[in-house]
Image 1: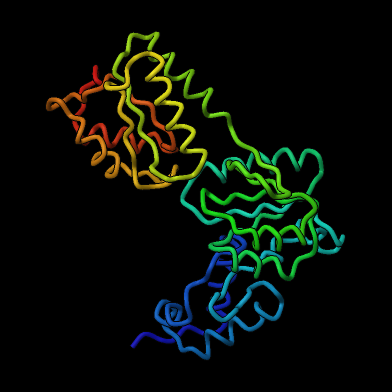
Image 2: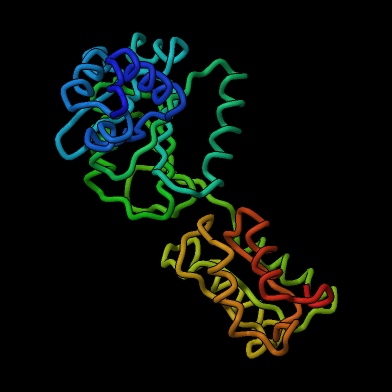
Length: 296
């Protein structure tokens, strides 16, 4: 029988998990840790105790054990001491690479202006409020909700903790929040016109079927472009049952398979994609479909 891991070995594992994890990340369950570390429940609880007591970890019934946002190193501690932090970034957990890229760019700009930023990842609104409960107020909050619905109750609770709320990538009306979003209508028009000017008459759009207003705007603009150039019947909209940034090559293959006209060609000569973050996913799909170079 393999020897049981000692308490300080468990704490070493916890040190690495906290250092490499992000605020709001959930640790494995006690049962999972018992199996992984080959030890008992009491040993796991004894090792976690100091982390919970010092506010490094937060343990709540129904929430599990998560990395607390208050423990982000010495650079972040002035946020709590000053009584009001500068910028809070609330980011809903997602595989989407777009949101982290924006946050990294924002963090660089804020550092240049000597502002402090605290980033908190969350899985649902209840967890977000639980994570924010030990923190003070912030001057502003950037909320990245990744196309999920926002409840009025959540926005109201958040409004009690921050002076200004900015929602990334969404159209928000009727509430006291700001929003930032790209004018995708112009981008779609420019892409369609560029392809038309390049000689393409059969153009398709590959995008998400999600009902978010941003996505609906993209699909509507594409259809209006096809009507403007009299190409409605030759410009299909191909929908994926996934959020932007979450597309996988297998999903793209299935979606495009129905538009194959021959072993190596599709029924359109150009494809506009919206929400494909990793271009390799599209390349893999086209390779799996064995689409020839001219068709691509």
